[in-house]
Amino acid sequence: MKDSKIIAMREMLEAKEERYYKIKALTEKYDLPVLSFMLNIPGEEKNFHEALSFHEKYIKKIQKILEENEIKIIFEEYQNLKTGMEYLAVIDDEGKFIKEKMIELEEESLGGRLLDIDIYDRDFKQISRSSLNLPERKCIICEDIARTCIKEERHSLDELKEKVREILKSE
Image 1 (cartoon, rainbow, N blue to C red):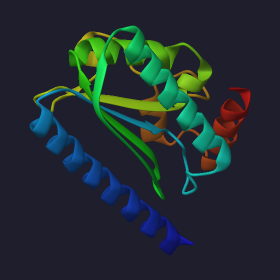
Image 2 (image 1 turned 120 degrees about the vertical axis):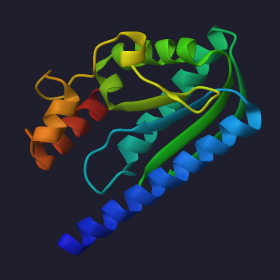
Image 3 (image 1 turned 45 degrees about the vertical axis):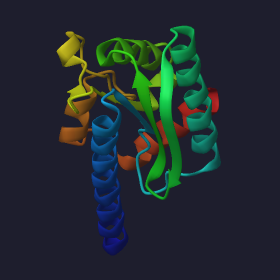
C-alpha cells in the first residue's frame, strides 16, 4: 500500500514539473498570460466519470467567460492524465483581469471550491489571490482557511473524498 502512495506522489510531482515547464515555454513563446485549470481531487483516483464531466463542464464555463469579455484564446490544450485532467490556455488579455474573472467563477458555487485555476502572467509570475488583496480559499469541509486544514491534516482522506463526490453530484 505504501509503495502505491509513493508511486502516486512521484507521478503527481512529475506531472506538476512537466506542467511548470510547459507553462513557462508557453509564456515565453507567446509573451501572454497562461491559464492552467485542474481539479482539486484528493486521493490517487482522479479520472472517474463525474470528475471528467465536471472538468469538461467548467472548461466550457471558462471559455464562455472569456468570450463574453472578448478575450481571445490564442492556444489551448487538454490532457486527461493519470494525475488528473489538465487544461492550458494562452490568453490575449491582462493576467490580473483574467484572474479576477476566474475567482468569480470559483466563488459562484460550492463546485467552484474544486477548481484549481492558476494564471501566470506574461513574465511567468503566478497571480495569487493575495496579490489582488483577496482572502485565501476556504476548506470544503469546515470553512476555515484551506491551506491551514491541509497543513494540519484536519480532515481524513475519506472525509475529503466523500465531500468531493457529494459536490460533484450536486453540480
